[in-house]
Image (tube, rainbow, N blue to C red):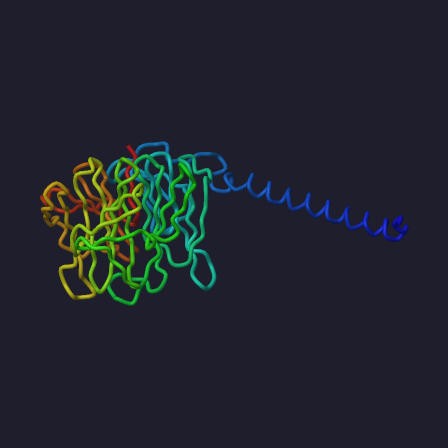
Amino acid sequence: MKPRPQQLRLALVVAAVLLLAGGSLGYVLHARHRDLPSRQAPADGSFSLAEPGLYFRDSATGLVTRQSGAGGPRATGGPSCDRFHTAGDRVLCLRKLPGIPARTQALVLDRQLREVNRVTVPGIPNRARVSASGNLLSWTAFATGDSYATSAFSTRTSIMDLRTGYLIKSMEEIPLTIDGARYHAPDVNYWGVTFARDDNRFYATVSTKGRTHLVEGDLRNWSAKALRENAECPSLSPDNTRVAFKKKVSDDPAAPWRLYVLELADMREHPLAESRSVDDQAAWLDDTTIGYALPGQGGRASDIWAVPADGTAEPRLLVPGGSSPAAVN
């Protein structure tokens, strides 16, 4: 049976509409993909992470900024981030998105600040780390609560492998061993990941039953094991032999922590000369110096301080009005 003229006209109209809609959708997606990188970099290309120096988040503007030398001039023009880290040829920028419920955008950039990838997760930006090679990235967001000084919080920590594009949405899926036995509990929280140079081994904090543990993880074998208690927000030294971390030394919620360094070879630890409570994931600025943020002076939101990793000398103010330090050499 031949179709009627009315049916032919209707079919042609429907086909034309679908073709136009499909073409428009394809253009929108192509244009969005094409325009994403250019939105991140300054129009004149004047700011990038190709220059050596100390990069950090400016507390007043929220922009990634570079300082050349202690007290040296600042170069501005980086992206707006709530948390920031860089290593290798990658930049990780965490942003709190507007609206309720809270959401975090993890933005991955190259050193010219062109977008490589982005992921949106629930929660408030908290910790950010990039492996030395730039291949692995991790971020932590507060799913509920906003402070480690209370028990009323939970976190969500993710790992992204840029070599494969694989995303671990929640590290709670990794099999965990504590005291030599496989451990299961509904209150397990991971945060504060730091990566070894082999792009396989990592260290992180695990909290469960009111206790925190330093854990060592193996991505290839998909496993993690607790090494010791009372260690939070680890940061692995550039030579991969030591871990800087914050240790709970008081039940005073206003000043519960102190910075320590752990020798991985014999598991001996020593406190750093910084006697104030530091609620930050410290950053190794080189093999001998550790940088971290403290509440700012003179009304500033935060300042960056530095202290020797061997426990000697006094802390010194490195960047007034900064946080999230990362050294690029």
